[in-house]
Amino acid sequence: MKNEQLEKLKRQCVDNVEKEFPGGDKVIVFGEGNTDTDIVLVGEAPGEKETLLARPFVGQAGKILDEFLEILKLNREDIYITNIVKFRPYKINAKTGRLSNRAPNKEEVKLCRPYLIKQLEIIKPKIVVTLGNISLRAIIDDDRITIGESHGTLMDMRSFFLLPLYHPASIIYNRKLKEIYQKDLVKLKCFIKDYINV
Ligand code: URA
Image 1 (cartoon, rainbow, N blue to C red):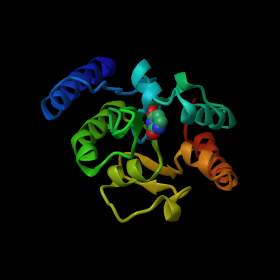
Image 2: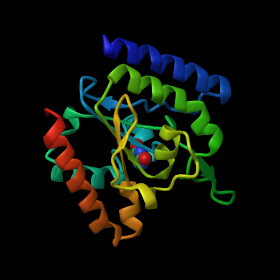
Image 3: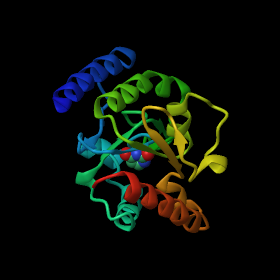
Image 4: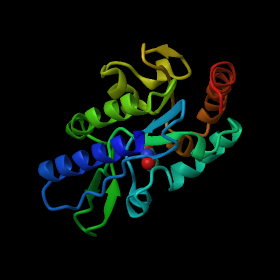
């Protein structure tokens, strides 16, 4: 039932993105995992590898995410993983013509946000873990909040709890964050132990 609803929602998303960006170069990476889960992870947007495989977090950031899941004793099959933006935001190098990732812009977030909100309504998790600033701001619909001030703080969103974490890729560029990240993971682990059956 949930899978059918999500499939239908994905088709609507594909159609809407095609309408906004005609030409069909946008691969939709909608999300994957256990739709009966209590835990949903929300990243930023797919990158090159995610687009090739149409799966979230299967590149470099995905490797770090897998390490964190191991700390939490969670398998990917136990949770649902998605992104706020469902297609790869990229820029083109004028000289080489090569594509590289960039952060999603406001229009892309606005276009995709309703699909994330509906995904959460269908899955009904107990906890949503946002990864990075962009998914955090999109979910709470407030551009002023920052991950620096809110990481590791559990927020009651009425229909679910929200735990913001730094984006796993930020650890690649700032190794100092690893320790902070691990502390936040301990909080998440305690929450999971107390409230969630996995
Ligand atoms: N980074 C994200 O935020 N999402 C992905 O799916 C991959 C990398």
